Image (cartoon, rainbow, N blue to C red; front, side, top):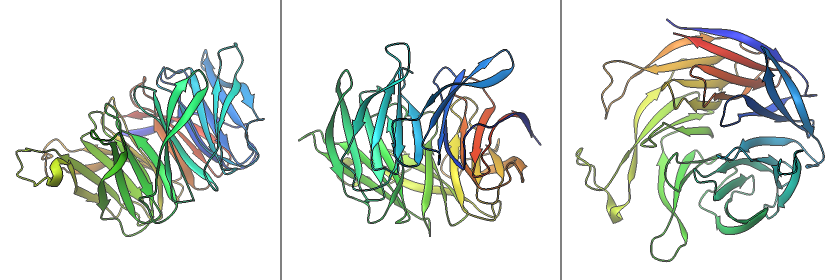
Length: 335
């Protein structure tokens, strides 16, 4: 069995902390929360400290933040119905653009792998795709109304311009740009959860997706592309996503976040029962019927709900978490 070792406990925000995001280089992270502020933290020696506080971009809670792949930009999604784009081009972080259009709370924001596209989603049930049109210029490329309820999370595929979204309508949807007319279409609907899908994450290759839900389960989905050797039919030559594994019984409350490590293949969850759990694919796992085991768990990782977990993209086995308890914690998996 592995162990989850607590390396740092950090405080600074007032109230609950909703989101944490590692910089692509892994030596800086950002956090956001109820206090309408973003904090940018960096490591000097063995100490993490706040280097910058960005408090003038939003009027309400900041729900999520994400760094662009180049690490130059930071996007923040807020309950004030806007998404702010920050950059450090002048040496200090400044809000260079504010994206408006959602009717109410923006819940999630995600950059495509190339950095040329940005996706946002909202309680207004829509997913918006924005094109980076130039320096600090963003144009709306699509408004997607495929979900019937609040959309909780958007995540881009790690190598392709394919977007996944998770919703209060219990489904996950995939979107891609049509080759014919440049319109964005819903190419797949993934249905198996029996309650809100809170979060999703792709594996390193992007052929599998993990989802977590209010129904207390984790599900692993696999893409079957046209001509696949499993004999799965692919109507309209579109890839089909199938649920190939369900993990249940480990979590006692809603699972709010999940992160699939691109370096180690480990999966981490953040749960409403205050716990963090780490899952590992078993050595005898089959491609079309994968099996995962719980490697380790920290049942009382935080004193209240764990809102977000994210693996460091550059440091294998390092995990960050944040909670309603107002703390950020950095962990190391020792397996």
